Length: 226
Image 1 (tube, helix red, strand yellow):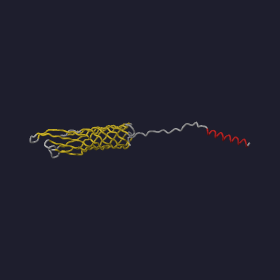
Image 2: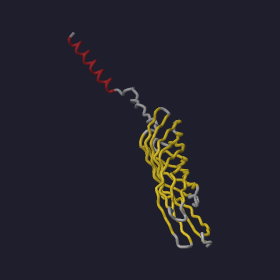
Image 3: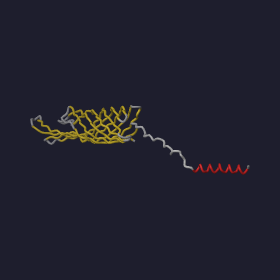
Image 4: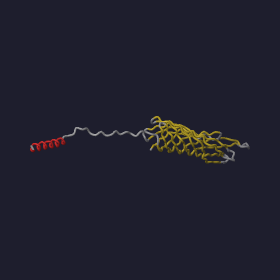
């Protein structure tokens, strides 16, 4: 009986060892799904912008300066549902200039000619933005502070020559649309209107005047969001 029991035990061990050597029929483990992070407008971004600026001068002998502009942008957004709130600042070099020639007659009846010019060297804005997001498109309005560095010059055929540099500040309002091509790259198009403070030129001279300057900006931009 003992011999039979040992034989049965050895057969069971051999069968278990043989089964362990057989190839498994289980499939390969399934990797967990990988989801791309959801897009959000929130976060810090930097960018470049460029476009066209037109400066309308009122109550003035100057002609309205106009031309191109290019610069950089820094901003930050917070998103709450579809509402996006942000702060943005930019600093642009402006190629806006306009020259004008004129004729005049002095009090003594002597005819003369003259020329003047007004140009904008730099424009900066610091603004708040409020937008409504539709997936990767953002429609926004914006407003805040604006300032422009201007240079003016006037001369005449009698040898008079006057020049003046001024920073002119004021407000700015506008709106635009921005679209996210990837989670990091966005592009925008916007219009800004900046009514700047009145400025007096050539005080104490025959050419003295006080004028008002409105700057209209049409810009596009490319941003990188961190």
